Image (cartoon, rainbow, N blue to C red; front, side):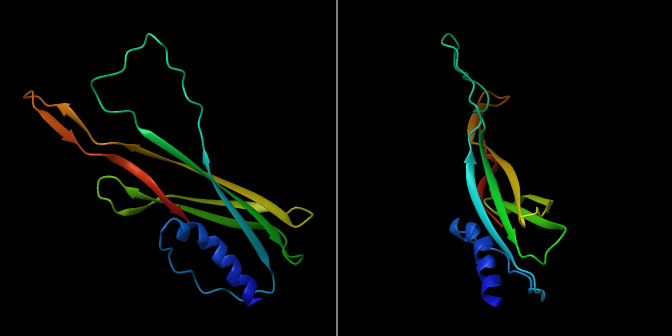
Length: 158
């Protein structure tokens, strides 16, 4: 029982550690005779790109186009026969703030899944990180002013 609990903890925190992130310390496990196996799969989601027109001129003034990275996490759950009813899944996405370069909790999502007749369930979570790179613009006095990058870049999940 302890081995399976340890393996599921390693799987949950593996995605964050793989990103070079130190996950928060897990809470002390509660005693339970039930067993749950989790499998998490992180992937990039590629949004549909807009078609460029041939006669369209590129913008010369203003900020550059923001870079959007969308990540998805699919969680597959297999439960023991003794578990009935809903299970609560909490997914926390972490990012790095572009201005301060500090790690921030970008998004936290909670969902409940119900176990089907075969004792399986699936949950999904998606989050988009939007980053605008640093750029220069003309100020009111006609001189170029630097505008720092803004937004968040992806670092991991728990």
